[in-house]
Amino acid sequence: MDISFHPLAARIYREKITWYRIITISLLMLTVIILLPAFRNPASPVEETINKYYTIQLGLLKTNILHFKLQAARKIPVTQLRVIFKESRLVYKRIAILTEYYNPYETKVLNSPAIDRIESEVADRIIHPKGYQAIEQILFAEKWIPDHYNQLKSLLDEMLGTIQKLETEPDRQYKFRIGLVWDAMRAAVVQVTSTGITGFDSPVAGNSLPEAAASLQGIRSLLELLRPALSQVPAGKITELDNLLSKTGAHLKGQINFNQFDRLGFITSYINPLYEKVITLRNAAGVPVPEGRSAINYMATSIFDKETINLNFYSPPQEYWVTPERVQLGKQLFSDPILSGPHTRSCASCHKPELAFTDGLAKPFALDGKTVLPRNTPTLWNSGFQTRQFMDSRADILENQLGEVVHNLQEMEGSLKKSVADLKNIPAYKLQFEKAYPGEKEPLNAFTIANAISSYVRSLRSLDSRFDQYMRGNRSRLTAAEKNGFNLFAGKAKCATCHFIPLFNGVVPPFYAVTESEVVGVPATKDKKQPVLDTDEGKYIFTRSEIHKYSFKTPSLRNIELTAPYMHNGVYDSLEEVMEFYNNGGGKGLHIAPSNQTLPFDKLKLTKKEISDIVLFMKSLTDTSSVLY
Image (cartoon, rainbow, N blue to C red; front, side, top):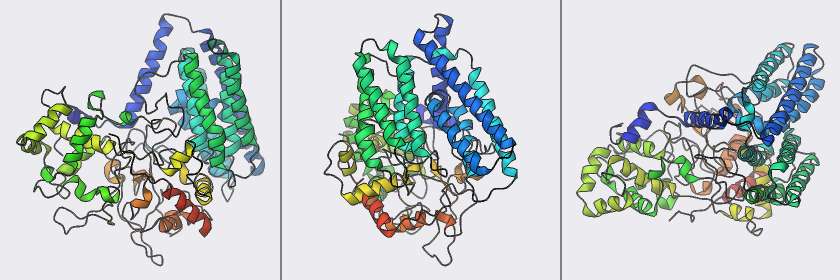
């Protein structure tokens, strides 16, 4: 790839800035900003109060884990250990509102998904599962072996070491500014909705609903501690929020069966009013929102608002944000073959607007019209709401993805440098670039070409489906079968543990700043008698980490009914076939699963009617009308 076409693009490419690093840097800067006042002023009374509360909660958690460790050392029956485990994670959930917001790295030692991971794409630094979810896998395994007691001790010791670090963190009280604490509460409401009630944190123990209730209790505790700092707001308004939190938690505690829980009714009747109250009360109290760039629009009063997720977060710096002029220019370039070497192929040749920006093929043809390329053409709808691009996640922003495609010898065989010269020879294009990029010394350059097309792609925003309209109050927009389909999708079928609400892609809540990939064990063909694992090694080709073999980015499910065939290799022609694959445990069900499959091996035991309802729900996510500008 030619990376010299623009200083910004070159810098991004050379330094290989990953979104993980961006987030890490942002958190470090946030920490510096928070701690600077420590050298000038004492902490405010509210900050001191929150710090004392945090200290007490850490102490309770440590005492609980020490008890857990002691009972494991005594080798009490696993059935009793399971009870202790469930009680322990309820204690954790009440404090996780703060730990997961302020200490995301340490949180991975306390409660991260039970799969291997790496940090900053360092291929050979594989970090094995830690914390509660790793313990859950041991305690609720089909077979209990004596060595499990030793494994529990090791995991619990690591957790105790992490709690010790949190307890001794210097100048900790300065972190607890009211604006950040309030945002931690807001984020916790999102977490309850997107990962709490869906079973993400409790995939085996099935204790998600009580744990979500514990999170709400933690929010109530923080709200009470913040009361003295909310003097601008009538006390009754704060009590209203507290009562709503109480009713929401009580409703969750009253649920016995995880699979039968009415999640759609819970979100519309409890979560939506609760989130709105959190936002409106913050505004009324004059509580500041966090500074800096965020994926969250802090003014949106619903998780399902069109503007809740900030599109510009996933873009280059502000001078390259989406504008109507750039979208119009990008739309024109998108369909112009001038960017390809032989001037015979445009972006629209493979991403056909009439086919939801796919091509309808299992795999596309190369530029020669004969060679078949290795992967299915994904839709471009909502691709602007992601921190990784390509199925193997090798690019960060759309501009870099565009550059790779243009320069790819099989796809377009072009050169953005050469395209600059070609476009400058067309007066209409030259004028459009000047209008779209008035701040550039040379408005028509390789990066602005990439940015214009990326701006058009970002404008393809699909967030006004019938489902969205239902969640915003129009209760006529979903059928009974579609409602049941959502409840299954977010419950028994476990779909929402990878396709996160509300984007229904792999961008992880509550911060929506990291894009996940998964290993599901996709077959090469539909042959069920002699199935073979597809040979495409996915993300591994890019990272060279063993844990990423056969790993692919979790795609968006919005407009999914329009984008067949499915999977990275286009092996399945219908959503029913896809659901059957997952219902049987993915690659494990076909007996071709790689050792690192991240999809749970268990069969979902969905009936044909349940699969039909889930498919109907997914089709309710169709929307090809809400284009920006």
